[in-house]
Amino acid sequence: MAATIGTHEMDASVQCPACSASGLFHTWDVIDAGDASLKDRVLFDENLFFYTCPQCQSKIHIESKCLYIDRSKKMLIWHIPSPDEKITLDEVHQALGTTSFAEYTCRAALTWGEWREKIIECEGAYDDRLYEIIKYGAYQLLSKDDKERLPLDAYHIDYADDDHDPERLALIFMRKDEKGMAYVYPITEKLKDVTKDIFMPILNQISGDGQAQFERFGYAWASQFMTYLIKAAEADANRETYGNLIGFWIKTIGEEVFQTAVKPQA
Ligand SMILES: [Zn+2]
Picture 1 (cartoon, rainbow, N blue to C red):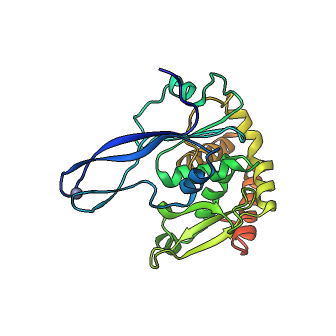
Picture 2: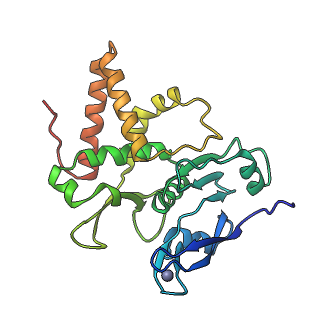
Picture 3: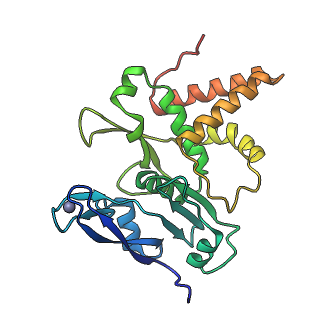
């Protein structure tokens, strides 16, 4: 079989959960960012992965395995809806048309929302793992009431405005009580710099070559990373230095994101 390079379409069989009628959903298993209109749909068309049952007209969200390739920005980002699903290097080679992708940023995401967010994060020059650490840190500063009002599962990173500049992203807190309403907090250059200075040396230390492994660097990862770091800091002889750095970082988030002073915890 000849390898097909670029965007690749497929049909997935679907059984309607409402009326059991079967049908086909036309979708993609490879999306190439060179296809600008399709890339736009991945980022902005909320109906892209919805199937309408021909029998009963129910709308069903279909998540299927798909690889997003950006050859100019050197990104390979998998949408893998089932965490048990394995990907083989062969699949990547076939889709990419080459066996060498050492210089690519490789990532995986579980949901369409996470996938879209990862694409947006990886388009800019800033490390996506640092964005995830900022995202995690900012959510920790919310009060218990605010966490109820601004649920974690709808909280995400997106473009700061309609220019869709990948260097200007924002934290988006969606309101539970009013559909579509959100608080948008741009991530400032100062917060990016401080976060990079503090965490990049540690990320460099703990991640091996890091390439060619499709890992999920999301909120859960950031939470584990920070827990690990705080434990390591407590065991370290330089714990005060570490503690001070993390305290300084939290203070910076408070000032840069929420424009409020964060009181040190007792
Ligand atoms: Zn149906």
